[in-house]
Image 1 (tube, rainbow, N blue to C red):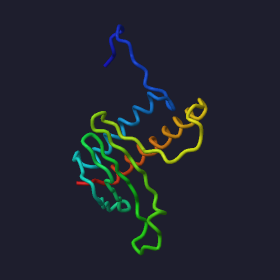
Image 2 (image 1 turned 90 degrees about the vertical axis):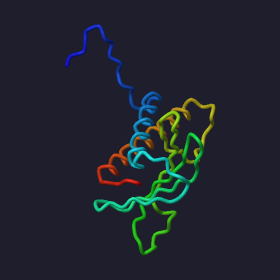
Image 3 (image 1 turned 45 degrees about the vertical axis):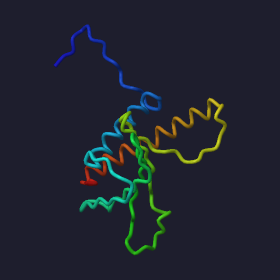
Image 4 (image 1 turned 60 degrees about the vertical axis):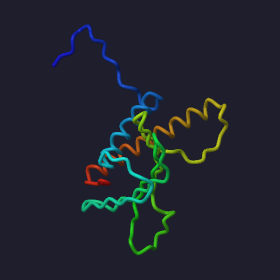
Length: 147
């Protein structure tokens, strides 16, 4: 179907921009809601078992009226030879009111007043949240769900 000639098309946000980052946050929110089967989990531990993938662990570490913070992680082996600190994990804050989810940043070095530092911070947030988006897509394709 063709768009009418008088309708202005809004271009999608560019990668590595604030607008693009906000779009990734929205995409992450939709995927996390699908992964959690559209429930609002309470503080605690959750496990998703998939025959096509490793077990996925989710821990809700904080919950408030409009947000919750979770940690997603794989545990690679059951014989406990790998310390939990060595497991890959992402800490994610989910905002129900804004319908967004973002990877919480780690401790960074630099001056808050530096434009160069702000640009690096935006790029880091972009990379981390794109990774989360792709990982969530992978998890959903592999049949993971917390219900």
